[in-house]
Amino acid sequence: MTNKDMLGRSCVVTREEALRRILEHAAVPSPAHESIPISSSLGRIVAVEVISPSELPAFARSTMDGYAVRSADTFGAGESLPALLNVIGDIPMGVIPDRAIEKGEIMKIATGGALPEGADAVVMLEHTHAVDERTIEITRPAGPIEHVVQPGDDLKKGEVILSRGHRMRPQDMAALASVGVTTIDVFARPKVAVISTGNELVPADASPAPGRIRDSNSYNLEGLILQSGGIPVRKGIISDDEDLLRTTVKDALKDCCLVLITGGSSVGAADHTAKVVESFGPPGVLVHGVSMRPGKPLIAGWAGTVPIFGLPGHPVAVAVSFEVFVRPVLARLTGEITLPVLEGISAYRVVRANLARSISSGPGREDHVRVFLEKRDGELWAVPVRGGSGLISTLVKAVGTVVVPLGTIGIEAGDEVEVRLF
Image (cartoon, rainbow, N blue to C red):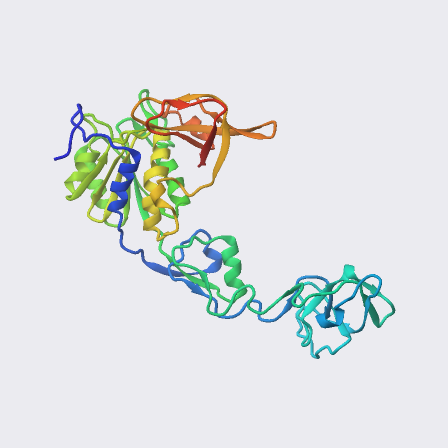
């Protein structure tokens, strides 16, 4: 039987324990595949490893402007005793030379040009002097394969270019194009339902009456889902009604593989999220309360194979909870297997900076403090952003968070900290 706190709620757990419970049940089925042009593949997740169908480059080519030579003809060359070689022509770009070079011969070549048969090196223009129209002196010896890219140096035929689970980047698109691969199999993007709850909420384009506020969390989540490779599906604003919420979640489960509910995660008469999650059967609610700030009232559970998260209503708590708990699950739903999900943090960059102002933390919790960065005398400083988790402007000003670990009372000004960038 689950232990309860004094409010009748399952006891809060640490971030690590919450994430362990969540990921333990995140053995989601492999997403469907689809074949798309590489020009549309940026940010998508590779579903089937891509094998190079050919060698790259397909021919030996120069990496410098200079002369294609037989390296043996330059051995011992120097300023006082240059090697004298005969120029037999130029190598046009995009053309394989129609003749080989023999002993004592060289051909002028541009960067990217194809080496003629018999040549095994390129001498840079800077190491040559023209004696006359047909003769060049070489003042520095060239070693074999110097300034030359050999066939297959870049990619070998049969080599794995991209592995399953890799997120496509611009350079990956270029690599595929270079070997003639113009379509790629990727995982279908998962649909993520976004449900906003609360009698106080009105649409963003409405004028709220006194005591009511515009729904902003759904827009934040929409952006976060898109960044993570999902497709947000808005299910609208739902009043604090348990039956209506259950009906909305049931509808979302038909076509979405992840459900996010904002509001309705704290203890109170109008908060029905936990009851609704439990109503869909085991495993039900796995986490209800995490020892971190913001984000303590987080709910995480499963309806069959579909994860459901009840996110706190405050904007900052939504953002932090998504980064720490939702994004690792969404990474599995998208098919991305390279993300270090066990760390429970986003895959964004981490930078180190000096803390500009001391920050304190209460006992028994892990604090995620918003910060912005500034340069001072050439050093990077993390400046805490003042304001509660209900202030959306603090997220706008911040570039990331500094984590005060559980069991510490704070971090002193001047200490070096790790900033997890949004």
